[in-house]
Amino acid sequence: MAWPCSNSWSSFGWPLARIERQSGCVGCFRKGTEARYMKPRYFQGIGEAPAHLSHIFHDRSDDAGRLQFKKEGHEFEVAFESTSDLLSKLQTILTDSVPLSVGGNVPGPVDEVGFLIESGKLQGPYIEISWSAPGCWTVREIIDGALEWKKADCLSDIVNQAFNPESLAE
Image (tube, rainbow, N blue to C red; front, side):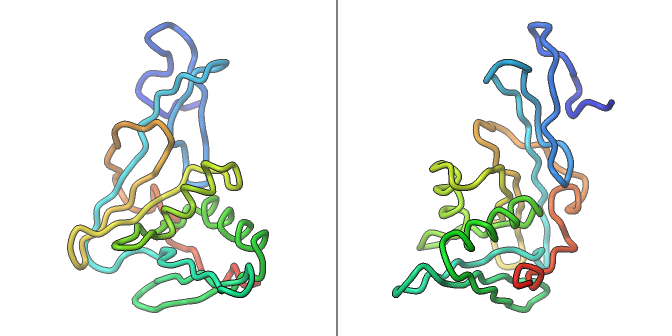
């Protein structure tokens, strides 16, 4: 079995266990303790950003709304009918390693999902996407307690590039 970090034993001699997701291992933790050693990954890109959740729109009259995605220069919207439907779709997005956009002057999907994880309604970790300039973006794995990030060799190490937003509508 390959271990996710360069040292499969902690400095105290405790074995480390794997934390795995669909996209691979994102960190380590000591068996039987809450102490964690994690080094999530990041990737910086130029040009077209990968498919990502750009907005979450809530209808004012009920719990319905829509999720807006951007992929290959196009926008896609997927409706949700209730809070439970929204939570189900957001959990699928997290599990499928789809980046969530940070907000600008208003809270973005990253903020809403972070709150839902903190309140126990969703299970993390998640991936965020942010921009430093037009066409210059960074994706990062967000894991509670992480203090530094390791640069990934390629985007597909972190992000599910085959994600199709329309699959959530099925």
